[in-house]
Length: 293
Image (cartoon, rainbow, N blue to C red; front, side, top):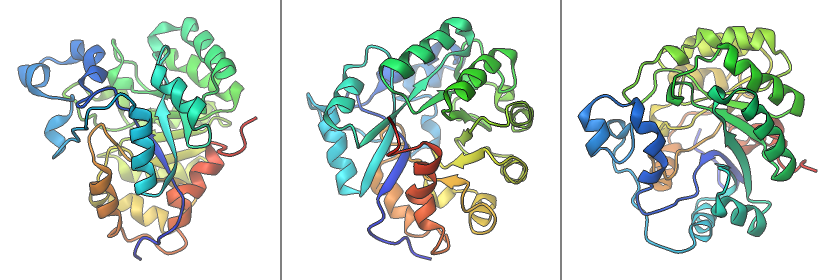
């Protein structure tokens, strides 16, 4: 069914720009890249997978610029990453407290120091989630690794979701850390923890559906995928038993333009009753949007 108009959208993966190209975001990732093309020529580590990576206008207020883009495309709330010392994130929270929620990109290699960081940032700044890129950690940390258990425990204790990249990563790095079956162990051992899978779960999307049927607190977000490439297994699941489990997430401005995303969304065959949940209802429930103290 065509995407209905007028539903306030929650985008679970957006970034506050730092420059026209945002290449600064990927400096810490470069040591993991072994091939010359990735190191020297790409604007972002998975550039070969994306056409027309957004190039932004120069401005001294990217927060205001991002809000204007959100308004244009009907995005009511966006989740963006909070990095310590980010003046833009502080500005976004101060100026637009009802338009942004924040995830903290955590480094499991930091052990208890990172646990303390999460507790402090949750207390002082107010994050709604923690996120982890297992294949992007240096060294890489598998989803079911003992280092990750510290993060799962603190997120369970704080009652906030953890967002995890699952599936073959776009950047040219080994994929073992993000194998789908690792999720099974985590959901078994932390039944209270809300786990939101990011970045597709390919080529194991059928297994992702099976595990979402198995575990009540396991969810899927559509981050980093142009809507025309949403896996068929995920669309079928959302249109049946998974209407409450699949959530919209974009990838702007990292790899996809909002024009591309919302143009493609028009042709995604979700059922009429799925669209409101997919575009915002599920995210508002899982991330407690509008319910923060």
